[in-house]
Amino acid sequence: MKDTFNMGYDLLQAGFDFEAISKRNNHNVELLNGIAEDFVKAARQKAGINCDKEAILYRFYEAVPLLSIAAPILILYVTSEKALEIKFINRSNPLFSNLFVEDLAKA
Image (cartoon, rainbow, N blue to C red; front, side, top):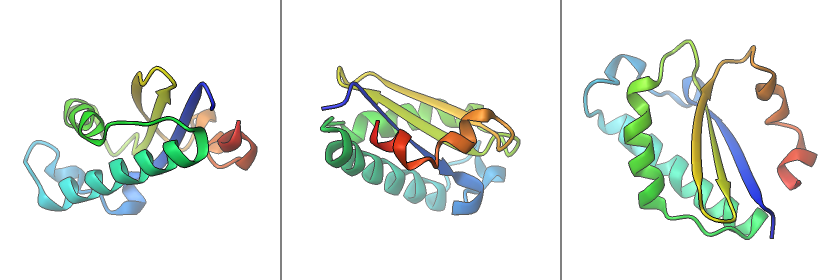
């Protein structure tokens, strides 16, 4: 089992509706639900860390008001103690290029 696991999602490319952040938008809700499901599955398979999808969704709804089109990349981190962290970055952030390095995904 790994101590931490992270994944990044490009919300802009995924079709997130940034203009509807202040409203409950079914498309955005479905998109975030799919991301949570994907992350739970990947964390379990790749890192042996079990996450609670509902806890992730709760954190999404807390974090979404901070989201802007200027930083559309969502990064989720989870530790083996199940501590969850969410960050929003843009493509110029050095973390962005590291999200897609396979060795980091395995580390």
